[in-house]
Length: 365
Image (tube, rainbow, N blue to C red; front, side, top):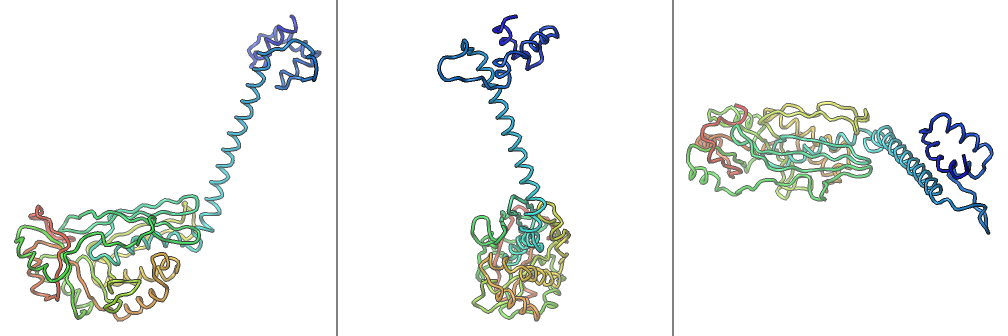
């Protein structure tokens, strides 16, 4: 078999597709032919000046292709190894010891739920989700407004905590007012105008704040309504950075709970149910205190919403002698008018009306 014929067989030799006899002939030739061995290794000998033999373009092309394939395979393996190393670094070191150090990522998820409920009268959480990323955790909370036994979806807010800070994903406030309130004292007249056969959610305001026990007694009034949110006086008329409207509160309509784990499933910060079951005005007070305590335990969370530790501390101190300033109530319009007559608030505003909800009982009854 000639030298040229052997070269034509080198690709089959590498792929192990030659029969035994032919492979043996190639082995014998390779034992004495340096040129063929160099081609087999992917490196053809190059000499300046006149070539030692005829140029074999096919053999060289095959050698180049084999070399390129080896380089590409090595690069893919390196990229895969780098990805695995980065994932392990994030899971075992960056997430538990940087992002979630001291449980801060878990606290940020809890605070995202709390901040929306605290400053938005009547708002409750319907769903939540969080995801741990390379060096951040993003939490999304879907919010709703109880309306009779139904709910109105209000939208969602998102927060992100990184190694050094916390705030809204879009840079805005984490506790926007997600529904329009008519405001003023015209709410009662509006309810009388729509008449019976509808369901509404209203906000009642007391110029002179009332005791917690007095507010709780209103929950059990003969009127077939439900108090779904209680707001507590925490600042003067001018408000504060922590509570611009001077009131913070929590849902009382239904209990809710979420289970939050450490970042990326790590044990850093622990896991557990971080919410109680208010279902009463005193319960809403306890949840308001808990939410503020969570913020004070992680000052960067307060800074992330544009307030300060002093704001949070003063707000929590006001809750040592709590007074109820606002209540949000839902039920049939006729029953709501009876409720207003009994409790005699200084102002009433209508948050939402459902003209098609003719016979549904109020929330949580």
